[in-house]
Length: 473
Ligand code: SF4
Image (tube, rainbow, N blue to C red):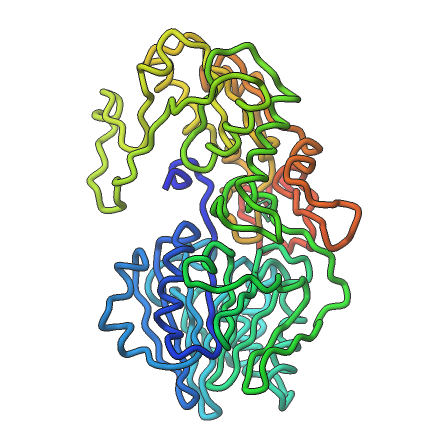
């Protein structure tokens, strides 16, 4: 993944099925289409009405779950997860779903997002005798549910949800109920689809097309939806719900064929490119995008600017995680693994290179060099988002503030460091306009925290990285 070298890493993906005889198989295909959201591990828990069974493993979905594993997972309901470790570290023990067995039955939990008060709650719970089996913040919810005094499971879950803060799209399953919930700010996407007589729930709608499900609706901020023998029921557990969906889902994370809160991601990116061309025009011969996430924005830029769009950069799709990476010395000699510049396209040309974001700046510098080494006369870098100046605490690994190049360098300093002929970023207003959410309603808000530092939730001191504590103090 290019994100790994950029320092901007995906979060996680949740997929669940209710009332389908092939629940585990459908979940497997669903997880496969959410693979871009996490490649460190995958797992499925299935319910046959009497018991919960689990399989999880490390690596890509195809590595973590084999055909024989799926055959063992018989049941009508399931919860699946692909993981990128944003909090709590890696290893199989932190792969999800987490499954807890007790005398009162089983409880499976899968989570996309990051809790900002997990550490404080964990200390409290440990002080009261809870023993944690993982270092993942997701486990906090399971302990809160299990300790809740309410008799009804839905009340236990809403009581637990009222104590946690941050970003979460949760799927919780027992032997006879599946529940999904979204945090009161709706920071992460979560959609519901219909499949036959049953339902599917997914972090992204691209998974619905893959499994033959029909889109039904979004899970709303502060909403808990329960699926049981009586069908689907909704309840609102937070009255202070105002949507702040993550802008980076549109800019970088989600698949272009997904609709995030009913806006198509490819169209949003193309519009960001159009905005960029309007705000920051430049005389050039070709426009190229950094594959894959910047291609849509580059097409939009080219269309708006009336400059031809060309595939000036090619990504090698077959660089697996286990491929032996070249040493620093070989890299300096020009052994390039992930991207190549197409000499025949860029040689002697003034090139506009559209990228979706800059995190540490090292990737951009390498790409500008690739284009110049391939003979580009000029390289004008255009970024289809504003500068990332603040870290994310909601499940996107944007590094610490001190590692974010835009937090400590001017645009001119960054341009000089990357060796570009010009560098410009889209404005916050241009980004809002490009994505096209109707900002006037509280249900249409958008999180801008990594660009503005205005976080939609309280940030607790124990969520901050030591470097950021210094910077924020
Ligand atoms: S801080 Fe940035 S990356 Fe994090 S949720 Fe908000 S918009 Fe998304």
